[in-house]
Image (cartoon, rainbow, N blue to C red; front, side, top):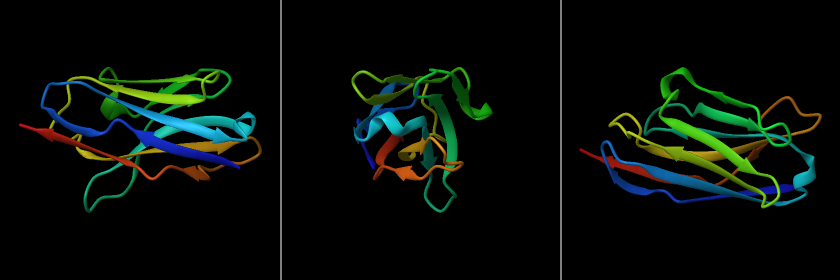
Amino acid sequence: QVQLAESGGGLVQAGGSLSLSCAATGRTSSLYKVAWFRQAPGKERVFVASVGWGSGITGYADSVTGRLAISRDSARNTLSLRMDSLKPKDPAAYYCAGQVYGDNCWSLWGQGTQVTVSS
């Protein structure tokens, strides 16, 4: 099994930048793809960005293209999300998610890290 743990959330001013990290432990060789999701208060959890664990191929939600950058270091078993030009719509709990080979769903989840944006 794989465990995911996020870190790096906090308070940032609108227009500022923040980087989130996710550490993967356990049977990381089973990872196929990893991603970031976010969930604002009272709203559903939504997809932000993904990256192939082995391929490095990235994908982004239309709403964040150009402002967020996802990356992974499979040697260090870490996933990162760089967020620039943070907006009032960006505050949320950010979750790291994983998909293992043979699965067709995001079956692995971290506990989440909170991002708050001040105006």
